[in-house]
Image 1 (cartoon, rainbow, N blue to C red):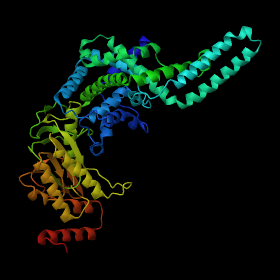
Image 2 (tube, rainbow, N blue to C red; image 1 turned 120 degrees about the horizontal axis):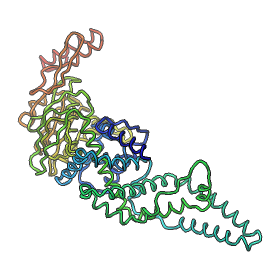
Image 3 (cartoon, one colour; image 1 turned 90 degrees about the vertical axis):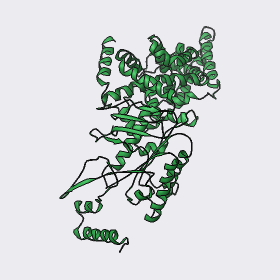
Image 4 (cartoon, helix red, strand yellow; image 1 turned 120 degrees about the vertical axis):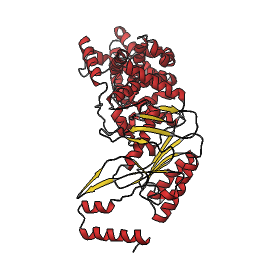
Length: 531
C-alpha cells in the first residue's frame, strides 16, 4: 500500500506543470459539461459564455489543454470556470487566491491530489441528477425489505415446517435472485452515480481530517454539509459484485443487500441534494485550482491580470498576448485604447488575433491567468461572432444566423457593464453594397454603446466610414517568387496589400485565369466599376 502511494505521489509530482495526456471518448464532453448546464438551467449565474462564443473559440480544445482529469468533480468545475468569467471582485479574488495557494504549497497540493486521485473519475455518473430533490417514494425499498423479511421468516420456520417451509424458502430465494437481476439491469448507471457521490462525501471528510486552516476558509460551508450527510458516510459505498461468484456475491444477491443500500442512499441523497451540491462544488474548486496552477507552470509565459471591476468605460491594454493553443505563437499587443478594425490579407493572422484577445479576456476572469506578458482590462461580458454556419435544421441561411448572432451582441451592449466582442467578417453573407452599409451601422452602434469591439474585415471601405470611432490595424505578408511568408504581427493603420489573386497563382491556377482576375481588379480600382 505504501509502495503504491509512493508511486502515485511520484507520478503526480512528475505530471504537475506538464501538458495533460487525458483520454476522451465519444460522449465524454457531454458529461463533463453537465455541471455547467445544471447551473445555467437553474439560473445560478449572472453571465456565462454562450454556445456561439464557446464554439467560435474552440473552447473544448482549450479545456482539454488545461484539464489533467483527476476527478469528475474537478473536470466539471474546470469546464464551468472557463465558461463563467468572474464579473465581481469577490469571486475573482477568491479564485486567484486558491489557484495561487495550489501553486505555492507543493506539500498541501500533493496531499490533496493523493486524496482526489483515490476518488478518481466516473464520467458516466449522472452527478447532477443527485442535485435535484428526489421524487421517489420508499416503494422499492419497502418491496426489498418485505422480501428479505419473508426469507428470514421462511428460514426460521424450517425446523417446524416439514418441507413446506423449505419449499417456500427456495421459491423466495429464487424470486429474490430474479428480482435482483431485473432491477440491477435498470439501475446500473444510477449505481455508479450513487457510489461516486458517496466517494465524494468520503473524500471531503478525509480532506477535513487534514486539519489545514488555509483550506478551512474555502471549505467551511461544505464541511457543514458533511454533518447532513453523516448517515451516508456510515452506510458507505454500495457492495461491489465480483466475477468469482463467491459467498459474498451470493449473499448480496439473495438478500438484496446492494439494492437495499442503493434505495436508502438514493433517497437520502435526493433529500440532501443541496448538501451533495456543496460537496461536489468544494471538491471541484480544489481540483480545478490545481489544474489551473499546473497549466500556469506549463506555459512559457503567463501573467496575473489587472482587472477593473468598477464598471467604468470598457478598456484593455495588453502586451505579448498569445493564443493558449499555439505552442510557437507570435506575441502581439493591444494598445488601441478603444474599438479596433483589423484588415489584412488572407491567412495573415486576423482571426487568430481576435481569438487570442478574446481568450486572454476569458482566462483573465476565469483562471486569473493570461498567456501574455501584461494584461490590464475591464471585467467584461465576452461575445464573439466568427465561425458561424447555415442552420439547416432550422431552415435558416447564413445571413439570418449571422444577423441573430450580431443582435445578441447589440442587445448586450445596450445593457450596463463592459462588453468585449470579436467579430470576424461582419455580415459576409450578403452582397457588397448592403454588407458595407449594414456592417458600418452595426459597428458604429457597438462603439457608441461603449462596447470594446474588435472587428476583422476584408472590406477596406469600412475604415473611412468608421473613422473617429475605430482605430485601424492590419496584418500583412511578403511574396517571394512562388512562396508567401507571414510574420503574424499586428501593425497600425489599414492594410495596403492584397494577396487573393497571387494565391491563385501560387496554388497553381492556370495563368489565363490569374491574368484575367488581375486585369478586372485593376479596372475596378481605376474606374470604380466592374467590367
